[in-house]
Length: 474
Image (cartoon, rainbow, N blue to C red; front, side, top):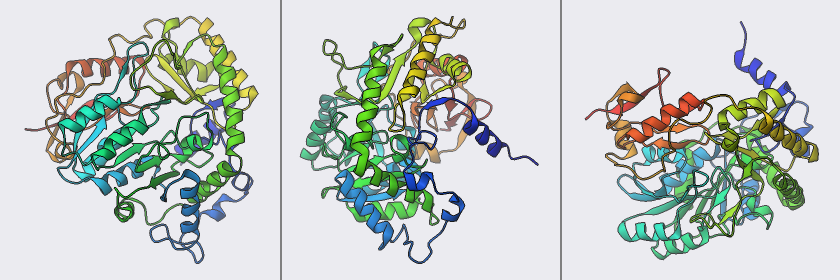
């Protein structure tokens, strides 16, 4: 009897190519030296033995490691997460809002935020994210939109924003933090893709330095830590750290992986000791790559200011391949199969590449050559999306996510779901930003877009194996 997952994993690991995707250790080459050269990882797969402390009641080495993490990121308290940013997002919402409480959050948040709302029972009010019509991308909510929503919903108990987005965009987080704090409520930040910001001044400001009260970082995305290794940080007096600890005890395994926790400790040490130098090298490579490419590259344009776009992560390269007739999905497949280059993300027209501290000049030259080869290759017929991209807007919210989850369900094909109430979040993955929200009325525009994405080769999460959507019964 075979082991299909193991065999596929070995094939992927052995394939010759260059990866510009998570995790941030770049196939192991960027792992901290002690972890990279430890020959027997199995010997490190231990449990709560004497001297190894306990994640749920740390008083020894885990407590010390978490304190060093807090000092590294400028937080008052930090916690190790062994289930990615997803568990951190759930914990910070459980710690701040409860059944029926109002929370303001962007319409283009990650699906994990919606799942956290099922757990805590809070009522979402969706902030309208700014829309970049040139790139067909949503960025962050503007300060004005947050202030208007705070005035319209004075009962709000918290505000959540994303910093940065999957495409590297950051908004007016410091100004938003001041506006939120003026109402006496906390600012929560999904900074899954911004763990590296703290370690170089040329990167956007870290969410903690911008004044956020609780911040989640996916260390495995942009730092040399193992997949699922993440961090939750807290500062100030608006969120009780005891509530965060209680939420994490509820959510995290009582048998945490010491390998994941050790990789967090080592990644923190590496970034504190040499992160500035390593990131400086990555920034130089990113500038070299951006300087000459055959596709448009998402960049800050002084003569074209975009609301909600205050800065961009220069180590994240977002290109638009539609001008050459390619969809992002088809271009991603071609690069992987023909050039041995793997992107982080494809959309209907974009590709995203992440440069990390382990990339070198040869990696950059290989990516550049592959992109020029792609631009010279005739695009397959019918690769582009067959319908307009809908701007993410708050729709008709009939139920909270928890109410939608708890209602009896029926399942229908997407084409028959228009006008019904969705029981689930439906997302193109990655990036995992919901196109349909749980508890929301399903629009014809959303259905047309999902069907077009599927036809163009996009991966849709939230449907059953037959392509049906769970709908709430009245």
